Amino acid sequence: MKNIKLYSVFIFVSLLVAFFFTRLLILLIERYTQLVKVFNAINSSYSILFLTCFFMSFFLLIQLYTKKILAIYSYAFYICYFCLLFIFLFLKQSNNHDVSLNILTDWMYAGGISESILNFVGFIPFGILFKRLQALQTVVLSLFVVTGIETAQYYFYVGTFSLLDIILNVSGMCVGYYVRRHLKNLEIEKNRIA
Image (cartoon, rainbow, N blue to C red; front, top):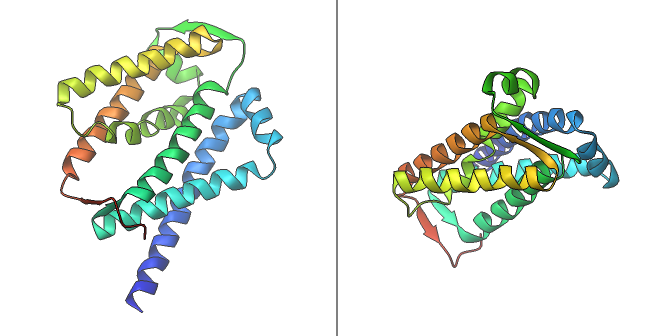
């Protein structure tokens, strides 16, 4: 009976998290005609987005509660995460070739708070992968990876090279690194599936 109540709470919290992040992502999608085309081309894409957010948060809650990171859940989480990251980084705009070094203008006119939250929170899971690095190495590698992403967006005409994006993405990766450092006592089970 205790497990049923616990899983009910996990489901409820996961539904709230999925609703919140799906709503933020939909706000972002609606700002870019290219993303609207991508999501409209796939049947039930918004439902798939919601279910992806739901299952990612549900399995994360289970792992945090049991203090055991199951490899199969981690692989599933990161497969979904990197697919979503690719879609939102490289498919949101076409024929956009710009450099923006003005942080305040970017924040005010390029999506405001919702896009800034996604730019920050969206890179926290990436930073969690840097568990074996020192703090300075994490900052340097994060800066290198994010600058590479921004350069690729600029070079392939799929986005703007934005200083604000670099700051927010690197900050998110560093927070992910520190979250992982504080959760390092979690047991990683590679052979157990569920």
